[in-house]
Image (cartoon, rainbow, N blue to C red; front, top):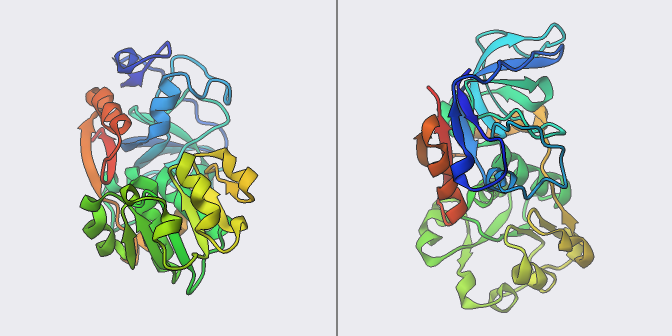
Length: 307
């Protein structure tokens, strides 16, 4: 099959368009998906550079990508939730790194998928899983956000942050976001009640009163200031910096979860969650897509499209 792969760690120059990749095997509880779109995330850049080599077994050649949307091509005999022809999306993270989603076909364990939201295009659905699940799991499981909570989301205009803003609003929270001044209108349209510029100094000095929960997407000095931003440090979550555990909060590492994907789909189809796609690249330009993500400050998501 056709796909992007690399045989050594390195820069974007290691990415190769291959025509000879083997079709992935379809196990008993596995769904073979013909890929329409694959989201591009900062973790893809980290994996390619070797940054996760100590955390997961890696098997070359590596096909990048964990996000996917597409159409079911084949199902294993134990699969009950999907049938050939179904439109699906998912977060295809296994316990090792090798068979990713930037290829014509991806074999996804059933637990990694849900039916695609009808209201989203394949590009939008392919951009949602990792960022959407990260935000959803942090807000609902770690921070236990509910009606009336004042929730502070740092780097709110990024992929995870923008999803977090919308999900927190849907949960009934009063949402406060941080972003550069150019993104303040963008965030208010998404439901932020208050927006601050992180360039104006520590948020603990800008807030009129402490918040109920903090979602940190920056780390470093921003995270170090979080205990002074929140009423209870136990309600600090970070998806970028494990040092949050030392502050009494919790580090979040997103996991595949079919139920949570279904909730994201429901929010999208109810009009409570939109997925702005900053730019879509054809498969052969995956390197450019990764470079754009690595540069940061992208408003919305970057995807690779195959159909």
